[in-house]
Amino acid sequence: MAASFDFSGQTVLVTGAASGIGLTTAKVLAASNARIALCDMNTKGLQSFDLAEGRHLVYELDVTSSSAVADTVKSVVRDFGGIHHLFNCAGVNPTANPLTDTTDEYWDQIVDTNVKGTYLMTRAVIPHLEAGASIVNVSSIAGSRATAGWAIYNTSKFGIVGFSKSMALELGPRQIRVNVVAPGHIHTPTNIAVKQGADAVRITGEQSSAMGRIGTMEEVASVVLFLMSDAARYVNGSVVDVDGGAK
Image (cartoon, rainbow, N blue to C red; front, side, top):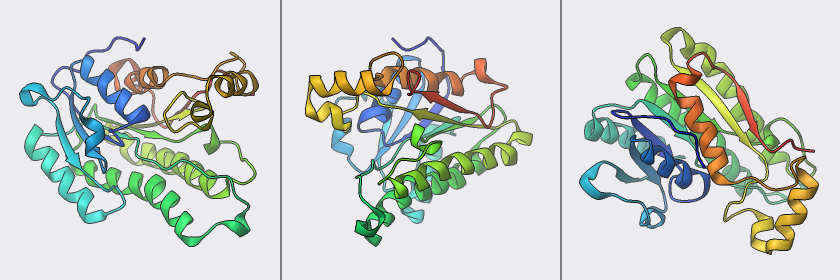
């Protein structure tokens, strides 16, 4: 169960909003009275979202396109009158490969979405943010510890941490906070263990977490809401691991 916060009168732009942590966080934010700008390439994935009364709006967006990002942010500001928070959740998960087996296309896919997308979205929203606003970026426990075969993914997630800490210093004087949520093994549709079934989920949880289970998307969403809320008004440049005590 997500923690209770009130975001009445606030607009949150969420990328990667059509699935997984992005969709769950958007729904939890909506239940906390936020207005959501739902951004994703896969707009069909947002059909389960309650769009009644126009309180939330959908935008088809490729976060790797500078022009598309700029146009979408302008549209969100026009439609909602402003942006109070940005949740950069669009990302691509890794495929384990030795570096010699990776391709330029794989590098582009991972780095462009995970890092360039975060950069482009952040750059585009900054002129529209005021004191009290916040940005939460999604890294991973792979942003602080390396894994063989994940060199490109590690690069992208370490990069998000460094980028976010720099932006926290740059925007802090304007009272705009930038923080990072770093999930561990989470029960998402794209999690390899989830795809393999209940036994794989149990084994992964036992092996990866001190709590003996994998986490839920709602448990990540709760941390995102906290980081955006006034309860975290002096939290800036932080990386919050949500991993149950990763082993």
